[in-house]
Image 1 (cartoon, rainbow, N blue to C red):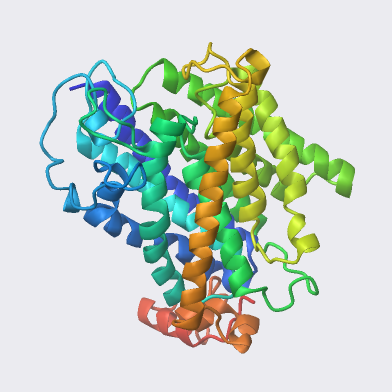
Image 2 (cartoon, rainbow, N blue to C red; image 1 turned 180 degrees about the vertical axis):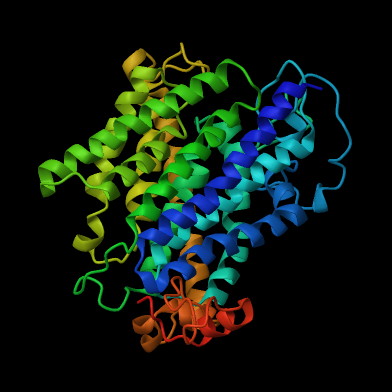
Length: 454
């Protein structure tokens, strides 16, 4: 048993887990004060539900032996994580979906832990596209259906690798197409971004979109959330090496380099376009860089990471304004940052990959021709189209059955009070000037308040 790598994977899993509460802060600060709790609850709700489904059948659908031409893992093979508590021996982890041999082995449950937090944050990312206007109950139904029909199969395509002896067969993108997606540019970011676009189109715009100001209510929360995301992302990318060694180290440095370059690029675009470099731009640029380097952190050198980050940051800074030109309400720029950024980072592997990096593949700029480039484009488009089409169908069905939208008056007065009987900021603090309010009285006051924070 490789105890060092096991410790690194468990630590990385905890770092990635922190990203979902970090996302809740990031998204929560970007909405208006009357919507902050609902926005954060969409991330927390996704975290809880996906965690349960992953244990029951999600891991097996993603990393079970292939049962459908590289499209789906056997949902019953590891149902309830059966058989995965027994220690394993040998020099390869391929039977558990791990893509490369390591000097030792890690427990299967460590890999389960690492991958479940990927699934959780992917679902949570989608919520930013539909802020302020949907029923929490319908959102939770959607999350359960979406991860089952979209995320678990796509994770199998991208992350499940065939074992060296062929006893375990993985997904088609990883093994047949051989597109490089080290940590989830396709399965996480393109996937969630395309889903966000489909939901935004089906559900429609917020009341007053394009006519009234919908500014972030707390940029301090946005900056805090971005910082937590950046911190956790080192587990996301460097942890995907699945061992504490050279690959993890290269992924760490490349992740840092691309994020710094992307932030600067976004701020430069803002300065020349709008006249100001903003804190929201800094936070968004950092996230764009993290998204872009996710698929490529094992295949580029540090200078390539700087270039990739700068390109991704600049493109995403322009892409977020497309919603106003095209007329869809992607509330918190899931499409502009995650779909566009994920696609950009995935395709740039075909240009910037170098055989000196751990992935050992050369792109167009390093003498590799277009061989890797076309593979990257096909993989990115396949995930984008599949996610968009299936999500669109799911969204339409839910629109006709459970219904998506909250009543207009609730959207105007505040979704927090309407959906959760709470407000994010209780400014009362005391009743009648007789000292602190007891817990039960404060809870009752919050439930009966008329959206004081709006």
